[in-house]
Length: 373
Image 1 (tube, one colour):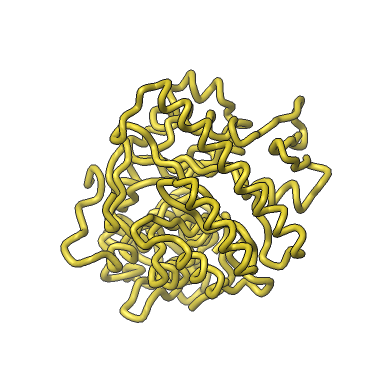
Image 2 (image 1 turned 135 degrees about the horizontal axis):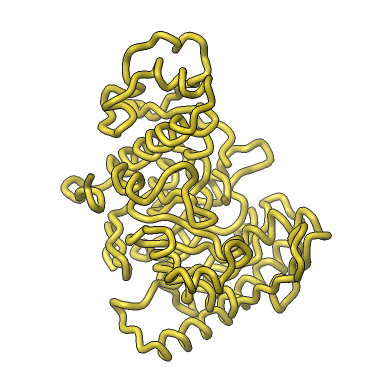
């Protein structure tokens, strides 16, 4: 495993890499060919949601996530830990957390679901994931010390159980080093350095292929928890890849890259696109075009003259404004492609000189948003 790349069953990722969230098996408004053309190397899908819709038996009938979604490149599957935080911890009526795992019944669902550390790994491997993430007990940095302590204890226990199940299935399938997916564990501990260190040390002693920053990455004011993120990265040897889970604001990606993180995912760039906030990549970072602004009605220039994506090479800002105002779905596609191309251009800038390859199948910090930033 080289620090500038990550070798996975469905291809090699050049690092750093931004992975858009394809939570339910799709990046909204675009298809697999669109993603390839704007240079996306991998996507993140979500076990917690996919086990409900379309359901594991349907995914199996449709040939696994890669075949179902028409995406032949790497897929990272998030474990469901963040959803436990955002749904169950925030709304106890939705379900409950226990030492065993998660039990939940979505509104309108006819039955309860259970997600244990073992089942999370089983599902991710059955889906065909390239990176499997152990189930973790996610918290907010402001949660009380007792909650953080419990989170670390559960996260370590669940990672241990997940690794045992992962090893069992890999041996059963006789998957060699090149054929097996990677297994990542998530480091929890909130804003406590002591708990972060304890969690990291116990997980490192078990041995995983990589690690993720666990917990909400923002403070109560929506600012990136830079000190906690930097300290957590320092706890893990530099040669091991770390995923800044939920970090996707352009400025935050650059900040975390400087700390040593190499994988990023977030719904923010695509959500921004759908709501008309479009990225322009400049020498000083990213600025924004708010496409609904009346000043753009007759603007006959591309969003970003330096961008080589479909949106900027073919369409004007004025036309995008028109599409947005009339509510046509073409705006959603073009805007999403544009923001994703901005993210792939941004991460390509951060790679060592000479490390940038062709995309697969070539054809100011504000509130962010997983996981979140």
